[in-house]
Amino acid sequence: EAQVTQNPRYLITVTGKKLTVTCSQNMNHEYMSWYRQDPGLGLRQIYYSMNVEVTDKGDVPEGYKVSRKEKRNFPLILESPSPNQTSLYFCASSLYRDRGSPLHFGNGTRLTVT
Amino acid sequence: AQSVAQPEDQVNVAEGNPLTVKCTYSVSGNPYLFWYVQYPNRGLQFLLKYITGDNLVKGSYGFEAEFNKSQTSFHLKKPSALVSDSALYFCAVRVSYGGSQGNLIFGKGTKLSVKP
Image (cartoon, rainbow over all chains, first blue to last red; front, side):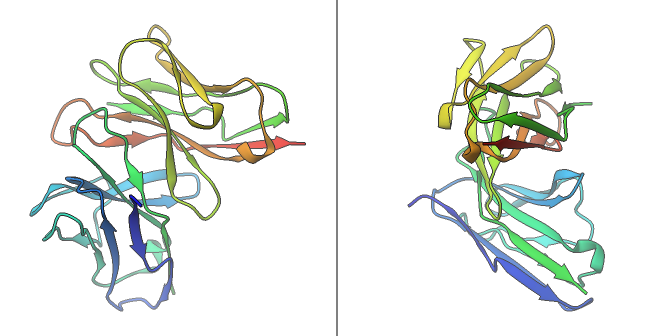
């Protein structure tokens, strides 16, 4: 089944403890992206990647890192999480970085930082 | 600046009645427009898109959307709402120029509530 898989689904951590949220897609998509979803703010893009070893900042990149060493994986790294990073995170991918290709989303990771 | 607006935070509809979820956009050049739906505890699912051609596009679950270039709108519609349509709906437009070309800009979402 074609899908975007994120892990974990739920994560509770403490301020300053490094964490990684994994994202993997099995559709051979070149383009991948991370979003955070907050009430009243909709979806905001954190980072995106056009292909292997190519990453760019989105609208809210502060406090996050990403890497794209393989086409299928695009992990999101929080080196020193803070409470304002408590949010619902989504990974997404698409076949091409062309304008007609829809994004496929993972089921989300709900992160709580205390 | 390129943007998407969903003017209603929530839309309430009785089951069996038609529904409309509004979306307006601002983009340079020809717009590539999308609708997504989010059910509780799930990721966003693609519903339909407008690229070119007929102004009325049909998508999943009986939904359709009407592209109106003069009003810069892309409203989502369904002739007869179901309780199971209750969800959060997002409109999105693809960035058409600049360094982030190809990225999607999302509206803030509209919560659709369909009552029996």
